[in-house]
Length: 325
Image (tube, rainbow, N blue to C red):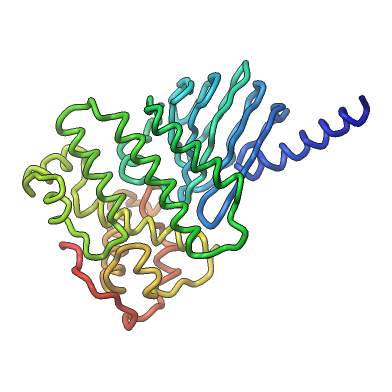
């Protein structure tokens, strides 16, 4: 009896550390199991708890948290939203948004922390986060990917871990897009466009022309649809590429980041000059939105990103078409 009690205490103590690694705090950590795996830019967890309440730390705007319900239910409170997460429900919350989850019963779920957020759908949908009812296939795919990574986590850091994070992000985007398949015609076109951007932004040859060509629609109609959401296809593609740069800067943890072919390759910018122009436009848009010079908490790269790469020269270049001005 004493050995079993001691093992339970040790396991609960380990759970405190695992929840902390996932950015959760609580006066009393719920009992249950927490299994995790992580790599550069991503963390996955399989969690089953017997109830309780957890409050999230501020993880910063460069991270997002994805919760996928498997069994049981919980209340999720964030940014004015108070919703329930049940089986086959998915919610995405930006890392800097306040978040509390609570349940009075057993609750099983997967959690993903991603440095490369599923940007297009996140920007369109999680200003006030809400759960998406995802298909059984999407739920099983997310569970299978998380389970495989937990069973055999990567042993050494490497470039392939960036692609793992990107794959996790794209699966989340696909699950959300599938859940919205019964939306309006314009909404569906906007979501499909965001999905294509998420799939192809890292390719420097991918342009707005490829976007409306791939959607089998006209340039003017696509711009009209995006204007209804307060944006444009060019801006969304450029913003997604800047988010990839921002994620890489976050991984460097403040070290100076040169504009190298590798950085351009993972972000989709065709040259250092093109990247600098995008940073300048993002900075000007931020200044217009915040005339008092307040610190930005939005989705674009902050001043630290510009400083981190601002000293690099223009000699490193990857050939490819520039974004439209």
